[in-house]
Length: 361
Image (cartoon, rainbow, N blue to C red; front, side):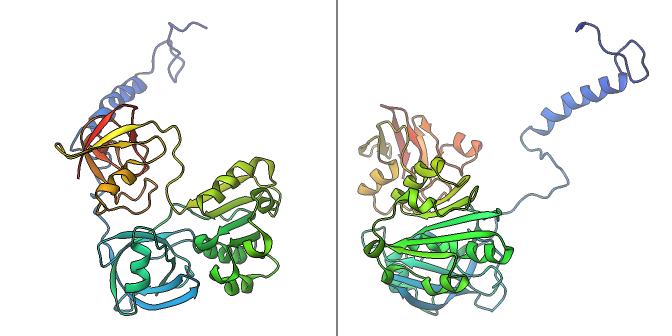
């Protein structure tokens, strides 16, 4: 093949096609030009505007299991709420200013209320305690519209694995699976029957497809045993404590299941972490961040007022600004421009070993 001789044009003449020469030249000019600052790639598309939050009112606050309350939220005027799909969550701004994510566990067909369930965590950051003690009927809240990072794809065969309060995103998935007529199974695990919410509601969906396993009767669940409930080639959707999810991930390859989707209560385990240092303010104290802890956890020991929510690197609540040092970004939220401007999510992002990050707090 002679690579130095151009192919004939569209009419078979032994020369480069002039139309495509001009088209290529235009493309070489146009593409970089439209990427310059101040220009949008599609001039006809309007500028995007931030989506305003919702104002909702608590219409009911009911205990449904040991240390678990169910809240229903509605528009104060009775107007329909934005739609959502199984796996979606909302971000509540609590009266104290704390922000917390909670999975929607109601029915997406119900456009007039959102339902969430919250377990009290006595030694947590205070959000669940505030929900239990302060959010009674009539309280108004600001809510960010539903977002979905745990979408249910409706595969032909599905296994839903829930640990404790991890049932909240999986309950709507079970309803969706039943409606779609797919081959589904659900296993709900927990300490004892009193601690598990929605047991009657789950069994009412299909008692032949729902299994309740409690530690006091069945023993601590084994991941391989849980996955053995999966139909051949099934997609597994799992939500629960970190040890449960890690065990399921390790056991997946030897199971009948083909894929795994997970929703975590908190941050995933730190992988390849190295110790580094943070300084809170230009003249503030320096704090050592061990290889197995996050910068956010270390900073909150000194500054417990620092905001946070998901601990997973996608909500942006804990955002800080880096004044000096080179961060190692591990989030799924910030854009390259935001990172270049110094933004950092300390819940997951780190730095090279021995590096010092000066953070504006």
